[in-house]
Amino acid sequence: MSKKTMIVFSGDLDKAMAAFIIANGAASMGDDVTMFFTFWGLNILRKAQKVRVQKSMIEKMFGWMMPRGPEKLKLSKMNMGGIGSYMMRSIMKQKNVYSLNELMESAQAMGVKLIACTMSMDIMGIKKEELIDGIDYAGVATYLAHADEGNVNLFI
Amino acid sequence: MSKKTMIVFSGDLDKAMAAFIIANGAASMGDDVTMFFTFWGLNILRKAQKVRVQKSMIEKMFGWMMPRGPEKLKLSKMNMGGIGSYMMRSIMKQKNVYSLNELMESAQAMGVKLIACTMSMDIMGIKKEELIDGIDYAGVATYLAHADEGNVNLFI
Amino acid sequence: MSKKTMIVFSGDLDKAMAAFIIANGAASMGDDVTMFFTFWGLNILRKAQKVRVQKSMIEKMFGWMMPRGPEKLKLSKMNMGGIGSYMMRSIMKQKNVYSLNELMESAQAMGVKLIACTMSMDIMGIKKEELIDGIDYAGVATYLAHADEGNVNLFI
Image (tube, rainbow over all chains, first blue to last red):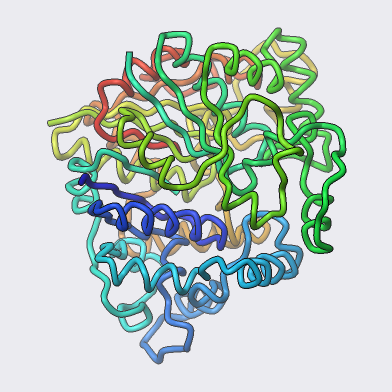
């Protein structure tokens, strides 16, 4: 048993899937896994439904332009106005591969720790109420404390 | 002598080059190097020629849209419809820098282990016959077993 | 106290910020931090002003098309012809978050080692005179020597 950490910087569907496939694999082998979501990666943790919160004009714009949760993420390549992402989701269902939503639930159920970066939340104007339940909130010092104990530390 | 692993998620020419430059550097210093190709990274391992294999409609589409091997990869930035990638390849030749093809051959000759991610192959409909010779096939558990022994583990 | 290394391959504003936030965090906790700038990441180290140097035609083109320093970098997502990058910079100022320029100065002041990849410089035709002061120059072997001593090694 060892410790793994990932900084999930990207909010792309494909990279988010890669991150959670690694997280689930490691957790199922008994590893302690911490995922630190920053910048666009925060979008993975957003609730699908709109949440009423107090925001400045510019925060509203950011919130409106960024995808809300795993069902809305796009591929980093070949998105083609959403066709590529749709194709990818269809194939995964057809081949019985877990969806990102299911991978996230599975990870949380196995004790993978999800941490939202508070500095990124502040910059992007994302409030706690907008993010899914069961996650932690912290900054770069907490990430570094986890990474210091990790034997595998990835930036995704 | 120590162990290095890389997840090669990207199929961009520049990132693939970075990955193989690191791999060659480490291998030439006696390190044990494992590269795990997943998602778009699989395209780096595709044979240049078209291979006749049984595919579903959607798998054919994916295969047709994605680049076949190192000569067809594009830059992640400034590709400009292929001009940037062409410029990059010309400069590298002019400056006597190894091409990606040569870097890959050199890596394999030095014993760098190339592993294609079977789950990504399944999702993208890529068959073993379409990938270059001398590589292995495995899933996330194998990656994690290698990474656990690595002192440098990168996600590219 | 331990050692951290980062390969900064990306020249995107957001990824550069993430890299320097981690570097500053680690350095302020007493860690030894080495950042190795390669490919597009070299643009982060470019001086803002134009520097007169001898270049081939193609090197001039590359130099002209790539951003000169932190003030000119663009977001990896939602750049929208510069509007997104402008918004991001405005918000950061408004929220009293360090700019990339300030993060870089702070990192250097705390002893974070910045290394420009000489091979990338050669390929892209970037000369030492064009890069900021106080940095080192080296190749992949130097990176690997640092990474071998690192307990956290990221590729950004």
